[in-house]
Length: 308
Image 1 (cartoon, rainbow, N blue to C red):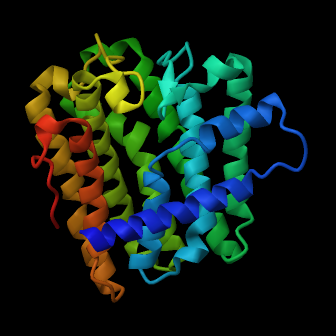
Image 2: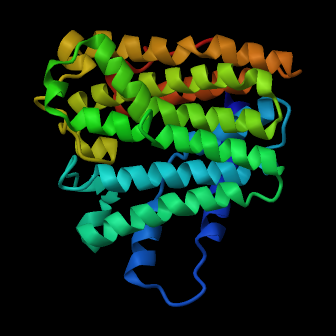
């Protein structure tokens, strides 16, 4: 696992460097640019962006060719966090261990920064010089799907709706697949696009959706079980809303989240093996995703293990 962790850290460092280049200032820092950089360049795990690079690498492509798409995925994710923290949504005071964007720059600037960041993401994907025109078009289409009315926007709407309080497990899972899973799916599928591996795209979408649903369930456990200082963001924000922990308790919910993350690994590994790789990075990535939660919740140490 140590070797794979080194790979993860190396890929994350490449993403950090490229993100800084993509939002490099050409003039004085103004509030809008400051707002955008405040959220995008804050310390973060870059999980979704790393997934794009891992998928490209495991499916026969070059991670360097996938770097701009990985950064586009991270820009979309960050833009969604800025919106998610607004008073009209989750009204969160902290994100990534620092004050949330609107607390520093005001709601209007935060919203505009989010819109600007989302559009910058599409621009970066569309201009990726190492991809063919067809690859760029396919990637932009996948990213649009992940954000749009079948993805993040729909999931966020349903998360905030009054009927959230009466959702059952199946309805919650559908919402989580849209709100969180869709961007994970797009991240993995973009890796297949970079690798020109069309056959792997369904497996990557399933892998990403399963990762996202499991991630969101474990995030609900974290929200119910950890302090804000430990989590690096506001917790207890799901109070009064239906979640897997509220339906099943934190222990069973954590196991469901772990199993969901594990669920997509087999198909991802098979796709990698068909491309001539061994798929170990997919397994290591999924394991790291689950185990990161146990680091924030020591009582789950050793209970969130993922295998192929």
